[in-house]
Length: 598
Image 1 (cartoon, rainbow, N blue to C red):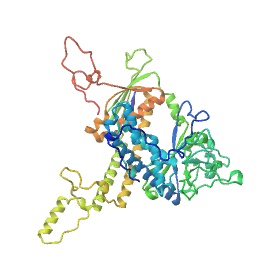
Image 2: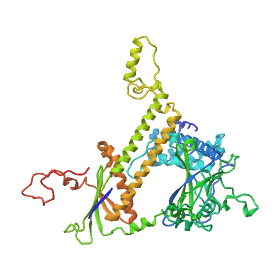
Image 3: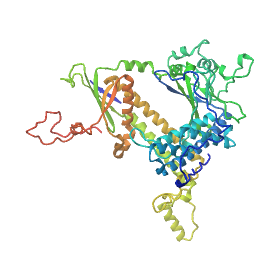
Image 4: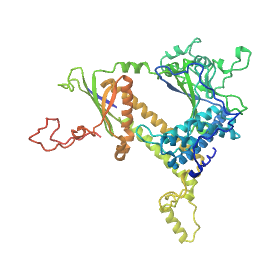
């Protein structure tokens, strides 16, 4: 591959006519007066802040719930989606009213008062979430107000991007309700680092040493520790965990009091207390860690210090092989820098620092040429310090991509057949089917029922379908195939990202971290060479190369060629006729047309 050479419906917002309004003031909170809402006030001590470096990393922990816990997780996601959909519809109706009242926001001060009246603020959306939660009869069995507040904050983030432009002056569109299948994350609340035993919503309890002591491999010594397990050679089995381990029980306080999770030092588990009206106790989901020794240096770095654990988010992914079609993960944010393996750190330390190189990204290959800057002249007088590399797709990778594309096309055809079979009234007959129907009708035979119509979808005069695709009836096979297609797409994307990181590390190890690439729009290439770009992914390679250069201590500089003469002197273009008054310097290949790599 690398070649080197030396829920609830949101109500409409009612607004009085302009003539009847003399002043616009923020609406008072319900219950103002003697029973007004109280505020906590200022902090008595200094507020906690992140460490000076501010580095954080996120580790994904796989959850293995049993059937009862999986049912509760499904109910939790259903309740959270109902609340978030209601908040998005409320926010959309308020944003529409805000955009319609353009006369009320002529000045920044008027716009601020208009937003306050409509309830377009973070706090107003949080109060709306609380009202939805209190008004419902079932949501408080599954959700707490802390989860509702964080869901409202996520909705406000989208509304804020619509109301206020970014640094380039662009805005996002109106917030939409979204789809149930795209709702994959429930945010959690960060733990308190100033007060002990205060961590709301999703909590991670247990220790890495307790997990190792609960599920040790048979060939390990009895006094094994996480540090010694991380030092084992890759391929050594460290843990032996069942497919669905039993959820741990919280220990009794001081051995005789009530059961508390804060003193649990056994295997790792994610705990959620549930809603205020829930009567089923804590939701406890065991954590399944990688069993091989190759991943344990990463686990010791992220899970070795429980004081560095900051926040847990609940995430689900499509998994056709799992019961219910979803697999659940806990994304733990740790107040540490990202883990760097020893081999990667050694490779970055050995990267040459006295070189300057240029990157040429193409549709199906990527070339890098670098020169040594230690000679004092750039470019050097001779070609002794010039090193070139060229990245192409090997034949084995090309065959694997073609096999993967054939499987994807087969899944897409199966999905289309399933949709047509369950929605026959929304498709016309194909040419052969229509001709057979005409012959049977001419022969006086009864019409034959068509299982899978092969014609186009019924549409209006403007070409739009008569009925939206989202209203179609979907079979169980269709849902299972769609989940399998999404999972295969995720695996392919992860494979491409891994390949890009590995190639970027090899290039920086040869040419150094100081590189220059042309600043161009790669999306325009897909209109001409879309299939080749999707196979080679030049944009992903350049992005990974920029991240690797920054991690090594250098920089991938994007140089614009639109305002310079660099793009006008490409060696593969036919040179203009010579001008006796301004002779061109001799260039290799001048006078004959060269064919560039694409």
